[in-house]
Length: 144
Image 1 (cartoon, rainbow, N blue to C red):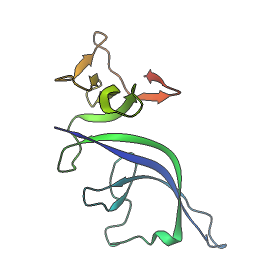
Image 2 (image 1 turned 30 degrees about the vertical axis):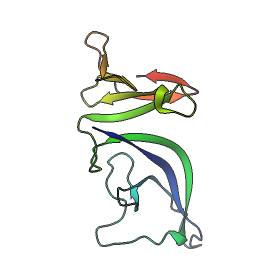
Image 3 (image 1 turned 90 degrees about the horizontal axis):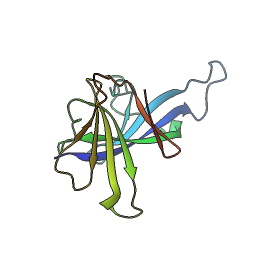
């Protein structure tokens, strides 16, 4: 079994930047761990944003500007589901999971679709097509 975990893409910027140095900001992926801790990750690699020598980042010194929200599929232990590189969540129902649909881009470039109640994934295949990215924009799905 797998679970949907929401995450947010933000710009992390200092609240009071030093006048002597340029304003440094960076993109970060913010997600909550199984234990409830907030994790700041590098969006493309999902590696921890903090340096190994740092145990904590004082968030009172920084501002998070939300740029977008998304989801990832994870196992009950919190580790990413192997083989899935991107997950889109589509909701056709307003307040229930009955209308929940998930579209995933697998690492080998294939698309999979799952609707609440389906026993397994349906592979969306156009012959030998390899897909590189999938986005949801204004309720429309775009696949490259």
